[in-house]
Structure formats: structure tokens, C-alpha cells
Length: 143
Length: 255
Image 1 (cartoon, one colour):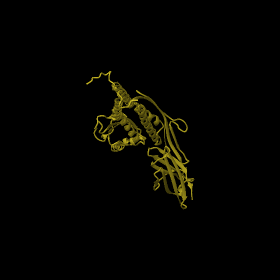
Image 2: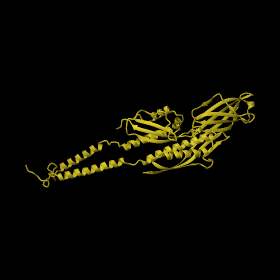
Image 3: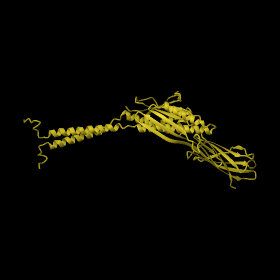
Image 4: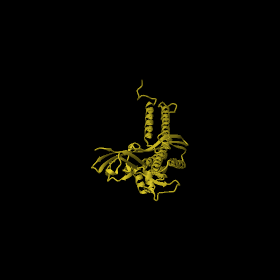
């Protein structure tokens, strides 16, 4: 049996090549994948729907709109959304007339990747009303 | 210097090239698998969240109709409100074609979706119930939701009285309010008692103690000769959802 050093058929080079390949694959596997826009918008849509659902779960959202309490609606949205998320909420009545007298938002938009969520809010009040909410969301600081 | 040909090479270049090609195949496979994992369809989650929103809107509609009925409304309000909701949802559903069916429950004790029992045994119940069926047909998935939505407000009233002297007595009342089986806070509570002419008169107790867990107690003094015995009292409670519930009970003497 021949010694590894005396091998003339390039066994060492083959091993080197395999090691180089493994190194190459390992390096490529460690490169962080860029989050696709589809995934990030999916997360934002999910966040927006959950936020509106949680505010509406005990009728709080409908009560704020019934009372035209836009200041408290803005505060509620700010308290449930992450600080790094920009939002702009528009409230329409059943005939698609805008109800909010001033923007329900936490500032100017800072990203051109904006998702929009439509939500139907039914009032719990004995005088029944339906509102259509359009929530726009965007991540602050993402490219 | 000796110039060796590729065929004469004994250092394993062919094996090296083969190894690199195998590595490339492995790498391509890995990239393909990673790319495939990123494209996992998420239609089910999206449909579920839309259904949750529709379910919440239906629940709010039911509460609104029950509040309307118990504030001197009529039973037709339930069908009218759900018809309005169906139109609004259908008009604003851009991602799928929706078929909705809200059916008021008509099984005992419910009638036209409502059950209102303001009894004389100290318990009052205001309840509404609908079965809700939504079919959603989208471009990538078809989903179906079938559920029962119920809203109930219940009040339990109990009372005792103590003879203070020949002319007056102290009446103690305990009121418990619950929404859907859980303790709930009242927006307003009004009390009445039956006078000597068997007419209901409003009682204005000095204070009502709120224990914060849906339980309220109150005490007040009445002239004995102005009351009818056995002493009947009633409590009308409006919960924070606007639903009114009333209960009557007979007070028992404790001394």
C-alpha cells in the first residue's frame, strides 16, 4: 500500500478540491438572504389586520369612530403599532365619504413601499353604522 | 522542462474537475431548495384573517341589534343590519368572491334570533344568536367559514330587608351582571319597588357600591306602609355595550 505522500494520482488535490468546494458552499450558505418585498408586505398586512382586529375586539374602534374621536383613535393606533411602522388611517362611511376631519397618521410617509388594508368596522351602538377603514402601512428605514 | 499533456497527467486533474462539477451541482440544488422554500403560498393565513374580521363585524352587528331591541326596538332590526353588513362586505371584497348567509336562530328559546327573558325569579337574560356561513372563492384558494355567533347579557338580582322600626325598613340588594358568561360592568342601573297600590315606583338609593367584578350592592330605607308585601323589587341594567337587561325578585326578611 502506498503512502499518501508517494501518491502520484493527485489524491491530495482531490481532497483539496473537495475541501475548497465545502468552504465555498459554506460561505454562500452563510450569506443572509435578502427579504423579498412579498414577504415584508405579507408581514405588514398581517400586522395591520391584527391591530385593527384587536382594537375592534371589544367594540372600542367603532365607539371611537361613532364619537368622531380622531385624537384618541390616533393615540390608540400609535400604542399598538411598532414604533418603526408608519401608518395612515382613513375612515369612510357606507357611501365612501371620508369621515376623519384630519389625517390619522404618525407623520409623513418615509418609504415608497406602502401596503394598504381595507377593514370593515361595524358599530356596536344601538344606532347601527358601518365604517370602511383604509389603513396604509410602511416600514420606516427599510429600503 | 517537460511539457505534459492532459491525457498523460497523473496528478488527477480530471478528478479535480469532476469534484468541482459535483460541487456546482450540489450548490445549484441548495439554491433551488432555498428559493422554493421562499415561495410557500400563504393564502390560508390571509383567508383566516379576513374571516376573523368578518366574524368580528358580524358579532358587533349582533350586539348592536340586541342593544336596539332592548331599548324599545323591534326584532326586524337584526335582518336589516345583517343585510347592510352583507352589502358592505361584498362591495369591499376585492380579492375573492364572497357568498354570505346570516341566519337568525329559531330554535327554543330563541325566536327570530332573540331570546329576552326578564323573569321574576331574580334572573334577566337578553340574548341574540345567528349562524354565519361565508364562502370565499379567490384566485388561489377557496375557503369556508361556518360558525354560530352569540351575544348574551345577564343580570342576577337578590334582595333582603330588615325592619328598622314600626314605620321603616332597610332594603339591601345585590346585583350581578355578566356578558357572555363573564363578569361585566354596568353603564347604568335603575331600581324600582312595588308600592302599596302595586305600582312600580322608582327608587333612588343614596349610593351603589361597585366591586369592580360585575357585582353591585346597595341599601336604602323605605316607609313600611308605602310598600306592598311580599316586597318586590326590580333592577334595570344597561351594560357597557348598551344592552338592557331587567330582573325582578321578591325580597326576603332577615330580621
